[in-house]
Image (cartoon, rainbow, N blue to C red; front, side, top):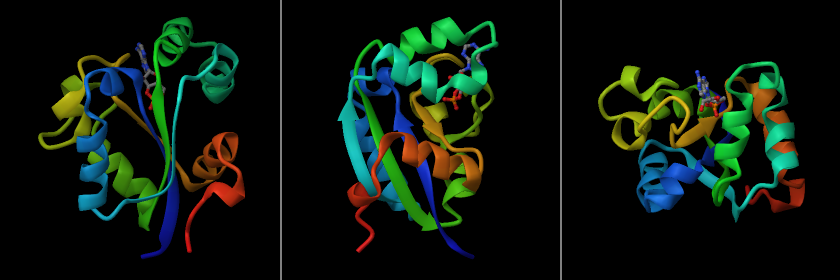
Length: 141
Ligand code: CMP
């Protein structure tokens, strides 16, 4: 299996509820190593740009409002099969459907406030990483 990078956000609900350390520890335990990490309070335009693909969805306004409510943790995770591994350990988008032991099952309350974001493909991982991090901020050596 190939070593990949993926992009992860620990969302405002999880930061507000002091779950940052537990979530990062969980990633590390499954072999997803943070190689870039920053805490940031997103602006409205940063959140709108990041989620531009969802701009026509009825929940877009609610999503941007939530993502700008308080700070998030932005991360690049590296590991074997990182994109799929991250999505597996996050669990389903809707926490009500997430499997036992997944991050969303453990920490998330609703589909809107679902604690973590993770890239859905290697192509989107590269786009999302570049949206928030410069190449020099990624510590792979
Ligand atoms: P994420 O993986 O960050 O990508 C898009 C986000 O939109 C998703 O997680 C959810 O938090 C959010 N989302 C998806 N569907 C809904 C919905 N029906 N209502 C509110 N938010 C949603």
